[in-house]
Image (cartoon, rainbow, N blue to C red):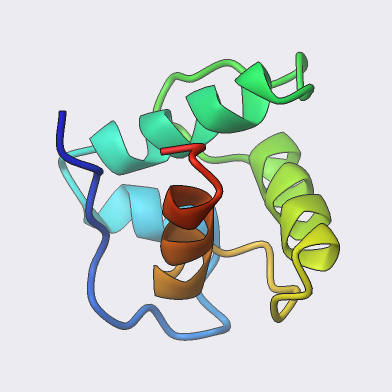
Length: 87
């Protein structure tokens, strides 16, 4: 299954809620949520609706991987998750 894709350049200030609201296809958000849940974030339900729990888990992942901590699902997050075998 090919990895999910997000919009090319999400502004740093764009929240996951805004990103999900803009995109009728929530499969990318679901895939990220499922990966986070699989790796210890049991509080996350892969429903495609990115909320505060998803943003907090993304921030934790970004910090651990030494990425810019934004809580936003961006290209850097996707590349890192793919490289780590999470997606």
